[in-house]
Image 1 (cartoon, rainbow, N blue to C red):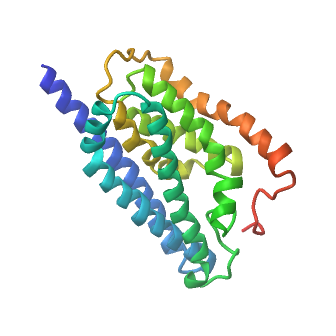
Image 2 (cartoon, rainbow, N blue to C red):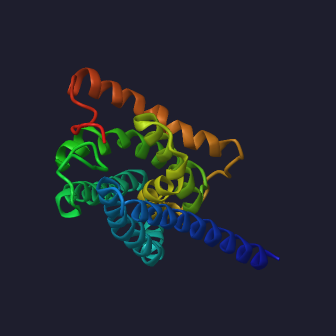
Length: 247
């Protein structure tokens, strides 16, 4: 019975991932076809293909390949797993933003001027990570390190939950776009999926109650509010939210 339940769970996970990836591919294909009549849409589709291949496909495959190794490392590393998780997921975010910023800078290669089409707030990598994205995510990563140390969230649950948090992050920044739900779940979810395997061998974590799942989506967003306020009022008051004109 237990093995049957396990196989059913694996099948369900695969179905969810295939659905998300299929959704993202269909969206990008739609933009690619629409781009035949509009060079800006074509450029946006080209940037999304780059993210699809380099981050979603590339990091997705690496995460599947390395998850067992990361779990074994976590089981034998003893203390400071929360700190190691925080450093690991921050590194993942820095890599992801390097990819997306590179795609923004590919605008001239895709037939448009720099700044006509973009997927990051700036073409300057340090500006993106220090004033727009990763710096805001740091409290969210700390919250997940704290949660994973105490509660037995599975890596797949963390993938989905932080993916939904990412969707809300983007909706708060640029407005809700339900069509991009799969995209943000995949992009944000892959930030935490592999690092979450550090905790798989941790004993004595508490069972997750049903109400903790929605809390785990919202709590990281609340944790980022002080950092956002610090950026806006102290660190970089007046810093533009986007360095390009509206598309």
